[in-house]
Amino acid sequence: MPHREWVRPSAAKEAAMLNVNPDLVCNLIQRIREFQAQEDVVIPDDGPTSYSEDWAMQVLAGHADDLTYQECVETIADLEPDQQMELVALMWLGRGDFEADDWSGARAAAQQGWTPRTGEYLLSTPLAPDYLEEGLEALGYDCHQ
Image (cartoon, rainbow, N blue to C red; front, side, top):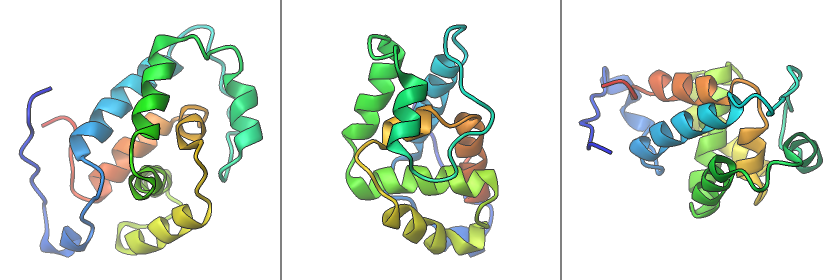
């Protein structure tokens, strides 16, 4: 993957530095899209509103052998917990649960609800790739540069 030069559009967003590498997030966005686009992956429109291990595991049942699924879950599991929390906070930011100027609030909420099954939570959330991308954009990052 080519190295991107991340351009931040305003100094106001400078406080929203990420602990998780934006390149990794962009790669995850692409891989989660690939997984969710598969014909046999059905994710209900009424996705979880918070971390819900049972819900995520029910939605993802039967996909444990899927290589894209495994790659995404393992990549996320290999991250430090604070980086996993940032992924969730980015998704919530992109979904509109938080504004960019409340990035610390989004991170705090993700920390409170953290679970070691962050990968399953993200993969089972409808539109997670779009939300992650919109969250990055709200903080001044662009996967398309």
